Length: 421
Image 1 (cartoon, rainbow, N blue to C red):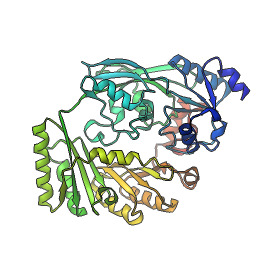
Image 2: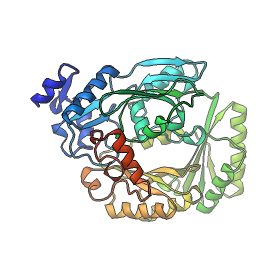
Image 3: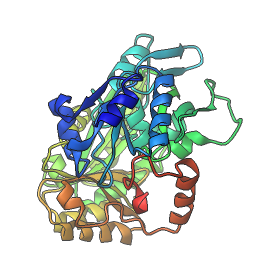
Image 4: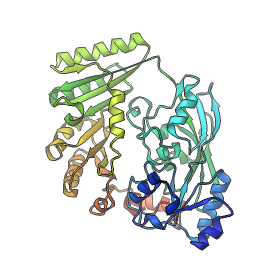
């Protein structure tokens, strides 16, 4: 303890376990086997962040990067780290180029704060992450948490134009830029997106933003699984332009049937016409329709899944098999709340009470559909019963070599990612 305090005390404020807030202690307890052995540092500048990492490199202290720690418990169990390095104080706006539709900020800014800034001029960040009020931009990028808006606007990595990050030895690295037409250099933005803090600590980012649509409406279509699958396929192959298309398990629709929650955003005339067209398709297939605007209610409900006793998994399936997978998952986990983005096949499964054997069965169902299941959230004891990531692809060797290049001493987020990376 004295070594850490004496070494870092001149660089940044240091807090030990007993000095942390209840929320911070809770999140660390869900992430670390020995949470009470860490020291929490919150650098106020990027240069200070670099100095802290350089010091950790010299002393071989392992680091767990985070923002507000809302997703710190996602991924593998972390056995031992010395420092939790939070970017919570790196929350400044650097530049909002309104005419270019880009915004550059430090990554400790909360997503809600970022939306408020760009919203003042009628723009928005087309991301729909979990825990929107507290999640930081850095955490969203590190976990690739895009959400339902991926259907229309693509993923987080497609919105990133430039980044600044601190590498293992404390050097500050920049990649990309602040303009949309930027193709110079290796695309480090895509590499660090979804890396769970294992390759470096993000410090600053530039993203695309979009004009806020004039009108927004959502519609819920529900009923027989076969008919719903046909409706989803008809919608995806039509000229309609929804911003999100989510397949919902019966436990989420409250209609005792699987559902299709579709959101449209455009000028009022276009939105109303598209709602009419989709209603016609649903009616022709014998499906029921609810035109109550349920999209926000649904996403607020999914945020509540951050319960301590809830198991949350990220899943991926072949889009054409998504409805079948929903039915199969319901047969082994009837109380599970499952949402699958119909266009990409990516989704989330949440269940408050399940055995590891049931989760492994669910993984087998997803794998049979050409997909995967990874456990994001669960107790440490639960995660130790199975392989959290369940990765069976052939890219592990490449990922390990990338890790060795970017973090040769394995200081960043040790064992949090695929294959113990």
